[in-house]
Length: 286
Image (cartoon, rainbow, N blue to C red; front, side, top):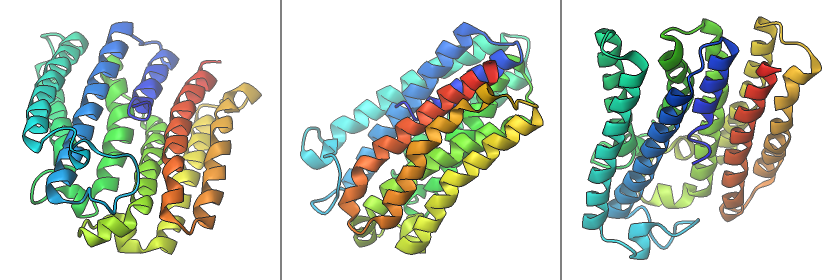
């Protein structure tokens, strides 16, 4: 959950950085994003549950259908209700941001909201679920990173500066690193279930190289943002603190031999990304 709002936090700080921050838009953006994340979690549980991917071979916390806590039919009803709530929250946010005057922007963001709901559900649900075809990383990068940061900022200003892509890339790749860790942990059960993730396609060694890039490129992207906006004082680099546990994670990943040992690392990288979003925002505000 903290990971899902990291991009929204960065967008809010960028809005403050340029003098267009609006508290109501920020709060609604958080609520919309959380509703999408909850929807995605439910849909992921449903999709993997009915496909049999969540079975006795899976590592990590028990899932709702896998554990028998809820039936697929019951969870499907919850997904429909959650989708309805997400749609209402999205429409409210769009109205507050654009009002009745900007019809084109309103329609564009309604389309973006619909795409977000579709992406949340279709990750594992359906015969052509994109999470089973190696496309999960692409969608996480786009929606957790670029859409969250640039789209989030656009709600305040109705424009964005091209350099804002840099923090969008940082959040997007760090979020993808969490998914990659998840897929490294689940590589054996995913392969058995014919879930073709990037890890399954690349193999473990190349997936570790990929993971290294997912952590180091955000560092370079953040430094580039500082350079573009001449934010070169000591306090403008406090976000580097968040990269200390991320670099430690790289050591753990490269030394890993047992998939189960990667499970605790997911939370660490997710919370480090959340910490990065806060410290990055504070660093550009000082």
